[in-house]
Length: 440
Image (cartoon, rainbow, N blue to C red; front, side):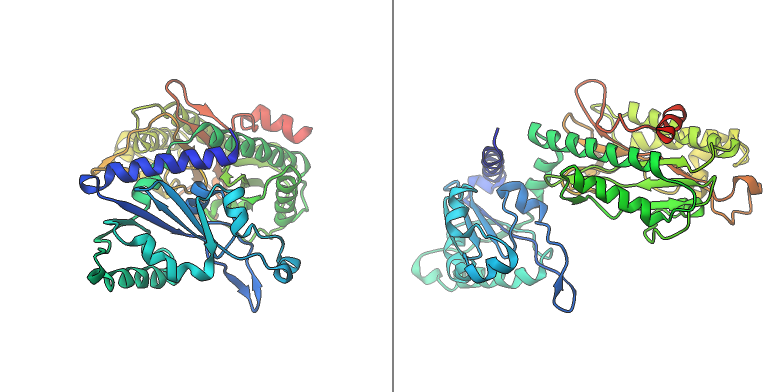
């Protein structure tokens, strides 16, 4: 299936869902603006990445664009920047109105400067508008002004929209269940991410800075066709591995440090999210290996729980129970393990959730609860499983040899009708596999 066919198939499913959700089948339309351009400093822009919802339905990756999808007529209208020879010399080619139709399959296309005049007509006689109000404040004013213009036309016999519904109510449910082309992109992202982690394992040495390892990751991502990292890479050595969202990446790596790398690439707008932890220079110490193997046990148990009909809460509870019992066994927590599980007494050392959705966004869309209950897992959903143990360098309740140990292990898991599929399973994570990868 071509990209254009995939986008058309998604739009068709979106039209069907809009019609099904409308009261008494009333006519509805959706309006999706592209991601805005953000200024980094002075007149320099941040790297542009299209809004995931917008790209999911259109495949169009240029800024200053708006998509209007009419479920009544099943039409796709795209407003885009005009072709401009001078600007294209500076910024690269544009699709223009012709490309919007010929390449991206729009039924109608116009230059973006015509939006304010044409949008009211596209909204009139449509009862419901699917629009994510409040998400793009700069566009909200244009959208609401268009609705006001429709209201001003009521004497001519048209009627304005009476409902505004978050487009995510439909679209994010669609994105939660991955189709074949999406899984192909995610498997490719996993393959590229594997190459980056294996390179870091084999080439990291004591005396390097964390940012040198980060540079290896980014170089591998780009060298193998990834557009960008899926998120800011975490490269935390020694005590920095205990900082959950460590970003500075500038410490000098010492011999014997554990190095926690949380990094994944984005491929064709789909993310990989992987964490591996391994020792640098020396082998695991007894204490570090004990913590590592406990986290790995929790992760493997959590992955095994990722089955149709289970919940993310259930996956989390499985991992927490393994960690709590293991911490008692190691003497790092005192008391009855079952009581510690019941009272969340493990949170001093494991304080985050085990899983999140994964897809176009690294923390992907999709409700975690439905009708007040934890959502049941279904085939096609992709989630992370990422337990960890973090013993602060100044933690007074444990002996000195345990302090400053931080371990997290994370993989990307596809829920299927049978056993879960670990998309990132080929990235080394057992102690023997890590030893072999570091020696290669």
